[in-house]
Image (tube, rainbow, N blue to C red; front, side):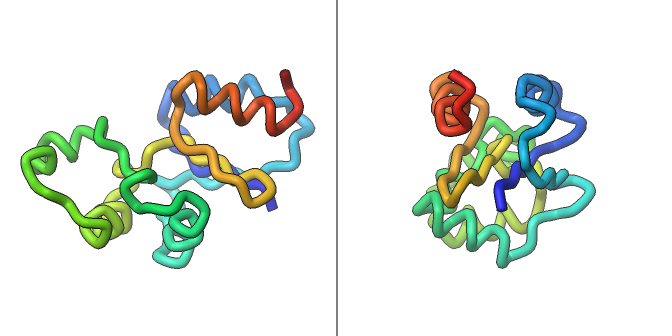
Length: 118
């Protein structure tokens, strides 16, 4: 099943979702209302190859907790992803077992190509 992990209150996520075709077969998972489980994070890890790839270093908590000054391991990244939804780099799309992480323009372009939108 194709899925998007997003934050409903995130303007960037809403803008990206709004640009998608309305008839797209996609399961929507709001990570604030329905926090990611360890199993889901592990599935995303299997597709991405690392927990760090899923982790947002732009999160306010990243700076607040001074994590940038620490040497984080993969286990640390997983722990923080499980602790708070803001640590997930979003949106995360899983399309036909391929993962698209974050909102960078190149990533969204790759997603649109995968969906046949460009």
